[in-house]
Length: 324
Image (tube, rainbow, N blue to C red):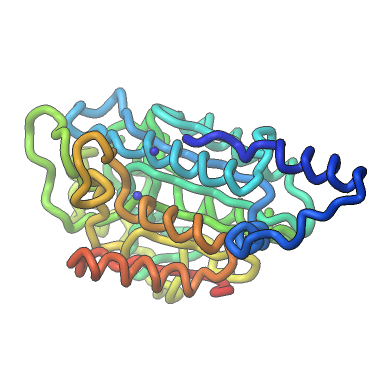
């Protein structure tokens, strides 16, 4: 789930001077021409949560800060203006993220292509019995901002304080789409509630899993499913929050039951040339640098092939929504 400088303006000035002199530069080199045609985005919100002050430091992450820096550098290199790029990194709170989402919704214009990116921990919590879109397992997927707190009890009203629900993200994407925007969303996190609880001790400097077992937040899965027992309807297949799939391309680092990791990347690189990154983010960024934001189905398949080349059979990156 790494900045280079912006492209220099000198070639543009040189073109103008030569044009005034009646000279011609000739065709651009093939590589430069291909880069100029890469599909880009208009606005973006990048969120990386590494530190969780209310949780033990052994649960903190290190990769999200690097992930956000990498994605920021990628978008700037593709021509995105700094004023159209919102970055929340380190320890953004729920209120910070919601405000940035609202700002993006207010600024977005019809026809624009937008990005929401999240790198950090995910988890699950019980759905209320009156949920608009009940899940088959009675559980909501949630993203964890920095100010997340321990589970606040049992029963229908129990929840993870300050968690960001998939339904909230889905509603927000619906708003953007209804305004005529095309939305890309990338989630380098997981909601693997069935994974083993983390070991005690200090945070490891190496690979870490980007999901908190509900027990780390004071909840057992039995409690969660019991408190959501009234959610009888089956879950719509292939959904994250909103059941809609129009106007959006959603990319996930893995399936909900799989472990998503951050590791030293690139794999096999020396100490001086590697950083802790979400494996998914690192590979996705390499592909986006080559081909831009154009074909979600092709991108996700290429990430899967990269995983297999590194002998990663799990997780399996997923795509929801529009495939192109």
